Each structure stands twice: as structure tokens, then as C-alpha cells.
Image (cartoon, rainbow, N blue to C red; front, side, top):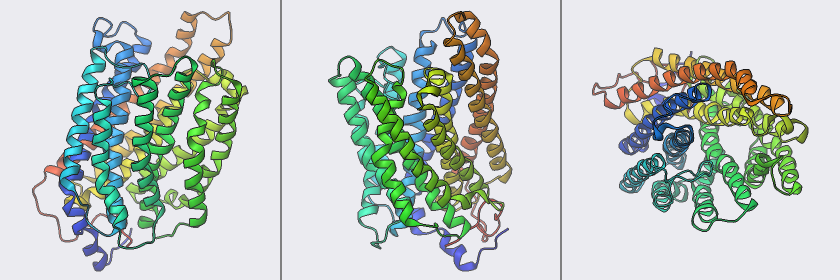
Length: 473
């Protein structure tokens, strides 16, 4: 347990936090709603894999459309809203000035989510595309680019108007995510939707976009709070900022080149896959540095926030090594184009990104609202459900993918036999996804609770909850 000095207590909630309360809560509320809806559709998708007749008579919920809906909701609903909220708060905190242009931030949030709703209706009615992570119809994509830029504006102003010329790793990753996503998103729109490339180039661009959206957007949005929270809560400095900067630039320059790993065994030139294999190996430097620099998170010392962050960091580093292993052709011959790839995606999105952002939300929530979380038990229950759900989901999908890969390489195994072999694994994945959905419901309910609470905060707000977090200025 950590006792917070009175000076630290009074410094915990500042004008930086209170001035952005409504704007950040709007982003987080939208994120929580999309997270729950995404979880419901994820359960539906997994049920359909084992029971194809489930909702088969409803065109909106056929597997192709419901899968596209679930993926779009998770990436552009939950991940975008929550990641931007956390990134903007961190940039304001480290910049030393309250966020500016907050009305623009609110307007951008409203238009982003309205465009997403319209896009989801388009997918449900058959207007979506077949491109992974870019299923939204063409008529909403330009609106989303503009809305994202409007939301990012306060973060850019916080970066350019910071009080000190000194910068921190958390700022690097947050600013990189703000700037790189519009470039990735608009370039992919042009090459896949508005002026689509022909033939095999479509597969190359699609693989580049999916990998780039992870390595250059979502991963930085997760690493920004990790680099902020670990030293702040533990009171330990980052061991080496020299290696942290090298790790950052390695991710930016090498990360998108690993997109070719999605095409190993596909109808593309062999040198493209070879570049991806080499890039995955080079990127291991980044994962090692992240693990070493933020290893203090794994000695949580009673901090629930750090438990979330530590699990997310472990999933992030583990996912990097698994990506490098499966990029090897001898392994890819079994794992490629199977549920194994889905497991890798879930490890990254639910395991790495979401868990770190959960921890960040639990840390910033009391600071922007001025109130303690109503129930520490709900936070612990969410952590338990998230750990069980993510672990079970990823392991089950890994098992299903491994079995499926071996069956695909055996010409004597029929499709019906293959489905029977993977069914137990997929049933386990469905149960794990249901547990994960339960945990996400707890987060959404808790977020609404603290956001709508009208009671005044206790005098010793941050002193009375050392089991959730420690505070180090």
C-alpha cells in the first residue's frame, strides 16, 4: 500500500483534467457502448462457426456481414474512441496545458460516431467492402478522415504548445498515432475503394493497411499510456530513453513492412513475403526494448491499474514473438489462413490494446470526474473476467487453428471432418468470449456510474484507494 503525501493529493486533479471532463467522457462513453456491441456480435460470430443455421435466415446477421460489423465496431468504435481519449489526456498532462479547441473535439466525436453508425447500416444492407478493417461503405470514409482530424486537433495543439521542450516516450507514441492514421486510412481508401488497384496489388495494399493500422496506429495508442502509467505509478524511471527512442523509430519504419506475412502462401511474389519475414525479425528489437523498459509493470504491488497494463504489455510482447515465429515459412505452412491468424489478431486487439487502455481508463477516470470509482469490487471483477476471457479465447483459437492447419495439409481429411475436429475448440472460444463480454459490461456500467454520480468526492480521494493505484508525481 502507498500513502500519498498531501501535496500529491492536491495535484492529482488539475484544470487540465477538469476542463476536458465532458469531451473525454463523451469519447469514453461512445467507446464503452461500441465495446459491448462488438462483444455481442463476436459471440454471435463464434456461435455461427459451430452452428451455421444460427440466424441464417436473417440477412443482416449472416456470418459475412456480422463479422464485418463486429470488426468495424471494435476498431472504429471502441479502439478509436478510447485510444484517442487516452492519448489526448496524456498529451495535455505532459504538455502542462489544458486541452484547447474542445468544442471541435466534441463536434468531431459526434460526426465520427454518426458516420460509423451510417457505415454500419450500409454494411448490414450490403454496401460494405470485402477489405479487412475497411469494410465501411465508401460514402462514409471521407467524413471519417475529416472527423478524425478534428478530434486530433486538440492533441496536436497540446503537442506544439507544450510548456517544456523536453518530450517523453508517451508523447512520441500518441503524436505518431494522431498523424499516421489519417495517412494510412486515406491511402487505403484511394487504393482499395475509390481507385482500386487491380489483381494481386489489392491483396498487397490490404495486407499493408491491416498491418500498418496495428503497428502505426493502435499499438502506439496502447504504448502511450503504458509509457505514461508505469513510471508514474511505480515511481521508477524508464531504464534507458536512448533505447526507447530507437525502439520507437524501429516500430515506425519497420512495422508496416511486416504486412507481407499475411500473404505467405498466397499468389504474390516470394520476395514480398521474404521482406516481411526479415522485418518481423527486426521488429523483435522493439518488443524486447518495450518489455525491458516497462518491466516494472509486472511488479504491480497492489495496483489494479498496473495489473491491466502488465497483462497488456505481456500480450503485446508475446504477440510480437508469435508474429515472428509464424512468419517463418515452415510454421506458416500450418498456421496461415486458419483460426491461428484470428488468435493472433485477438491477442493483439483484446489482449494488448484493450487491456492497456482499460488500465488507462481506470487511472484517468477519477481524475477527470473528481470522484473515486464507486466499486473496487467491480474493477477486480472486470480484471478477472478480462484475463479469463482473453486467455481462454486466444488459447482456444490457437488450438483450433493448429488442428485446422494440419487437417488442411492432409488431402484425405474432408471438410466435415475438419469442422468436427475444430468444433470443441470453437465452443471453448465462444464461452471465453462470453466471459470477456461480461467483463466489458462491467466496465460500461461502472463508467456510466462514475460519470452520472452527483455526490461530491471525498476529501482523501486518492489517499483512500491505494489498492487501485499509487500516485507518484
